Length: 360
Image (cartoon, rainbow, N blue to C red; front, side, top):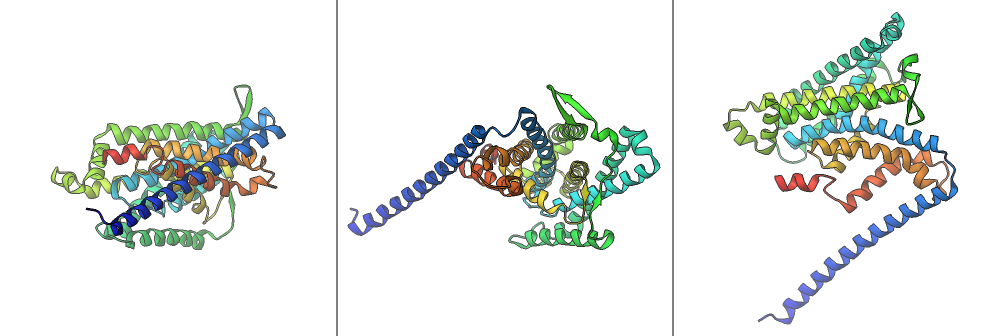
């Protein structure tokens, strides 16, 4: 028979659960109302033309494609090792530097303007090699000793590698900004659906889609991809099945680093600047995009990156301007992370996180 002393704690527990659920729903409704108020206010103001809205969407898809490529590096390493590689943004920075030096050399010789396809391929190839090499060395000397260590040591090591790469590049190349070359063929307008878009944006989006498709095929349609997924599911069982875990992990870091190098070149082509600290902010955003898509899930990382890029580009005009906030574009980073948090409140496991959790 249940006594009164047992009933009281149960009632208190139910009340705490109900209060927590009510607070969550109040927060969700408040966020939804703010979003609706901002969007309605922006529409009523009617400050932007159709061309401007199209430009914002096009830029959002462009930078979102770059975030998606960086996010793929995070999600691949996490999927295999359950390690958050916080140095991945700086590996992207290394690829951007490599692409810059090749592009600057080709610009001085005139090769960049005379042979754009070969020049672009050379930039990507060198950036991929440099970033993949740094990623492999990072795994071998920094992460492998901590592979079987539980706790915060691997995370602290990843942060330490990030600072090491930043300060190394600062020491080698200085702290000043370097400008990516801007050849004519990148500035040429391209007509899409009756609107003009810079060729660099079309090139970045198209190339990013190709890279993401190739990566998806490697992960899901090759023997090495099968080995990667096997190691991701159970390292011990994969070892018993004859899979060389060290080889799989090295390949994963090399592949993620190569994709990060491509992202570094694209980021430099879009923003025209390269410096030692440039990988930090896009790296953090890309990590958020990976979490948004369901970290460990390759399609989720792609969709999460593009979604974050579109939100970052559209939200200042579509939301902040409608709320009457001055200089909304100076708060672009803030609104990107705020919307990311808002989405995760509604779906804590990310876009594809529940399905991934169910499989495992």
